[in-house]
Length: 208
Image 1 (tube, rainbow, N blue to C red):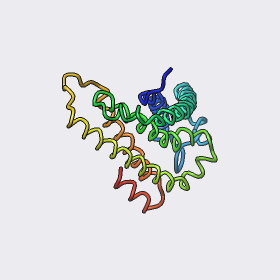
Image 2 (image 1 turned 60 degrees about the horizontal axis):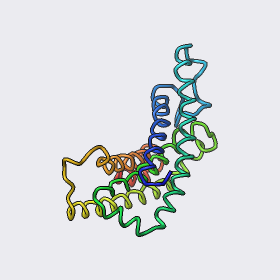
Image 3 (image 1 turned 90 degrees about the vertical axis):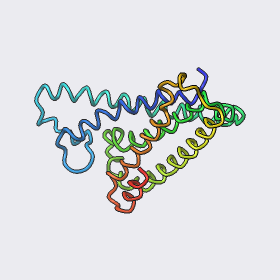
């Protein structure tokens, strides 16, 4: 299958499915301080029905964590090859009918940070233990994504002002820039919520 930036919609969807069970368990189950992990799951305190609910959710989360990570690696490789053809990139960037798809990789790559801190760390104890050490690199990651997103939005808006798109032809894909901003902001607010360093949390909160 020929690569297009819109392929990243598959990986971002997988990341979203992985994130949902984690968020539910993080806030619905007692697990002590910090982020919930597989080791801190209160299995012994659950009834049979709860175990029947949460055990499949853990399996679903693992499946979609792996799917998100594998697809992300695959699509980043495809994106690198796609970006190498600069004439092709410019033709898409300057086409108001297709340039909205360029927001999809940013949305997915931003989702990867949230999968790393939550669902992946749930299964990898060593990762869970160094989350605070990842906050500064994560802040840099977030700021780079935000700058790229703002630059792309400015370029797309400029193209749209030169070649307006008929509003009748607009549909769901034209919300991709809003979607990307939402996911990048989610990354920033996640850093602000998780970080134990007040300076890092403050910078992330101001950007997110």
